Amino acid sequence: MVETIALITAGLLVGFINTLAGGGSIISLSVLMMLGLPAPLANGTNRVAIIIQTLTATTSFRQQKVLETRKALLLSIPAVFGSLLGAWFAVDIREDIFEKAIGVIMLFMLVFILYKPQKYLYGRPNISEKPITWTTYLAFFFIGVYGGFIHMGVGYFLLAGIVGMAGFDLVKANAIKVFIVLAYAPFTLLVFLWYGQVNWKYGLILAIGAVIGALIASRLAVSKGVNFVKWVIVIVILVTSADMFGLVDIKSYISSLITN
Image 1 (spheres, one colour):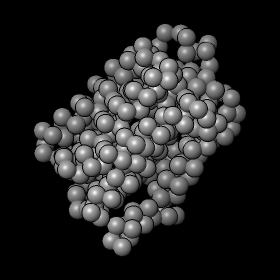
Image 2 (cartoon, one colour):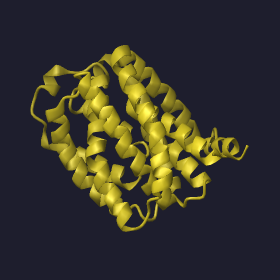
Image 3 (cartoon, helix red, strand yellow):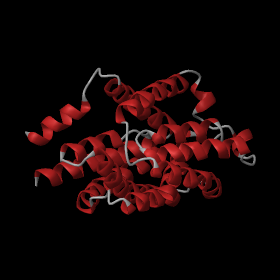
Image 4 (cartoon, helix red, strand yellow):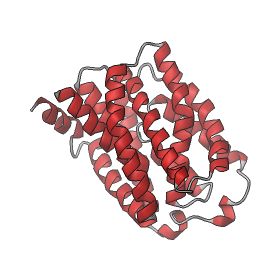
């Protein structure tokens, strides 16, 4: 019962955070490892919830008519190929190195969000209406590599690319982001399955909460607009970056909640 409650609660938070911002997988990976899964197995198991969560969010965004399906599909193609490469390297994760890298990147994103936000958050039709450039395709290939490798924090890379290079506002960027993750996540899951690094029981329980969180977040993103999404991202970046640099310890906090 404790495991079930912990996984569903973690899934709900992760589904909400990942749909509006990114980096929520720090919670699910922490919980899975606290429940005894080694890092590679936790990484693979997390993909089960990611697929179901992004399917829910994508369906919701499309129903609300904010998903630019054609551009999302085009951007997902290089990301899929990159994710396959990344997943093959994900068997032996150096978690400490990547956590620091994510923390630095998120702080850079925080500067972009707070400094001249109209330039980065509200969309630029002069770019979004043009064909996608080869440099954008290349960027999304490398984002896919990272997403296939560890996934944690990939939402920030995707938002940076979709807003900065493709010119969409934050709400549409979030819709495209979850579509891209939905496109590549099944392929990376197959790689983890090949190596026997998926715990279906934990993954499916985690997915229950992720579906609820994704549905709530996708509705709020559209109804509340860009400013709401912006401040959710700011809060998540500050908390997650503090954990990455050792100012707070989310993993220990989660561990104490589970054990108590």
